[in-house]
Image (cartoon, rainbow, N blue to C red; front, top):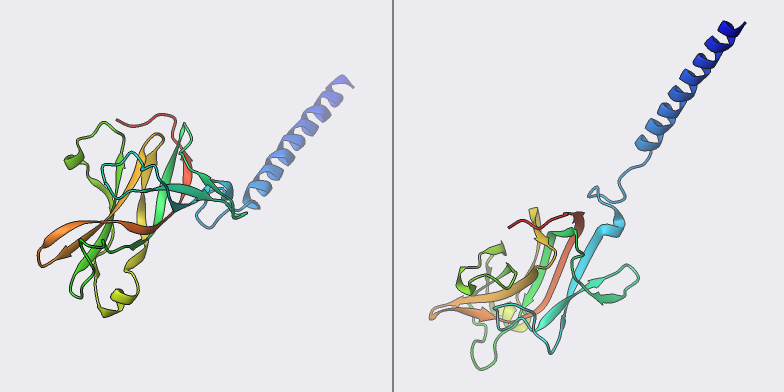
Length: 199
């Protein structure tokens, strides 16, 4: 009698375990990613530049704005990458401004935009670009409407906590090249876990 009860108990335990595994597999297969990029919706980030009287810690003298996070509710808050996390930037939008009295846009000029990642310990002239946009050739239409671009990155780039995102515009004309201010910068991406920053 005791042996029969023991067999029944083991059988019920096996069925309970099997049922739990099936339920778990069903739950996992029925729970698609929160977004089309396979990331949690709460980790998606939209950053919008806002003009400020306090420049960021960038070597570019025209960085006179800060990046604010735009939430789905429409609220903007100052953005800093949380400790232990990193930002993957996947999309970049920008609009360049002419520099009154120094450089106005002329047909035949070219404009581009780059992003550098600065941590305060680098040599200014040796900081590489993490992103370089396509070159925009200035036409008569750009004299009336400012040049810019919207770019979707194939792989994106990663920004660690404590690093400053420093965008800058640049022009090229018959006399050489120089730095331009940017009217607007919008970055899109998502946050990932990164316990420690790389060197």
